[in-house]
Length: 256
Ligand code: IPE
Ligand code: IPE
Ligand code: MG
Image (tube, rainbow, N blue to C red; front, side, top):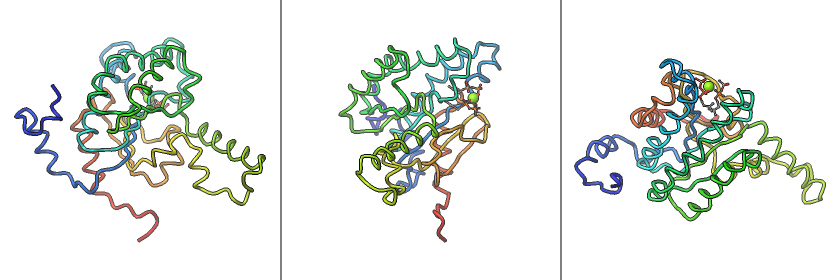
């Protein structure tokens, strides 16, 4: 049963009533999340770090539901950074297997919710089975018209910018344009996020106050929202809180 398709369902009343508080006109189009704190969540329970990653993966479902309910257009989730290769091999292996599990289990629900899967990052460098699972999910959801669930995997903002600059240089070498033609739009158009737009809101869990090489160019005017809550404990209610806080922010973009 899909609660969110049944607005008058009794069980759904609580969710509906909390939604009345939202300012419909100020729902962020694009929310990006740095899902941090899985390791500490596990450590606190005397469990191996990977148990935290497993719990963190399950948690994505809750946030996808809430994003769908709010009518957010794009939800970007930071799953694995270009710097995460510095971790122990077994943890890397586990982290890179998680998308296989996630997509296998949740694909029917994602289809049901009309969610479209996309990725940003160097997917080609991932293990073959992970690439296959991602490709299957992207292909299967390609015609869905609802929320875009954009998975940042093997993603690093500096790597992405270098990629864009290389494309621009090639264009100059090929004579497609001159150095003087290079502008912000051009650099933006070669980023992996070109068709997604900049995040309006970036959420980071676990109390760390940094971006860790996430969407650095795109975050120029993003609203930042931090919480001490560890990612596996972050729930729909927390997500709502972030959205309501966002609605109270005054975005000036350098103006008055
Ligand atoms: C976030 O949790 C998941 C990834 C970085 C892939 P961490 O694994 O970074 O958890 P902490 O920060 O060590 O608690
Ligand atoms: C950021 O978390 C990367 C992801 C959530 C995938 P990290 O745990 O890797 O960030 P640092 O090392 O604390 O900056
Ligand atoms: Mg971390």
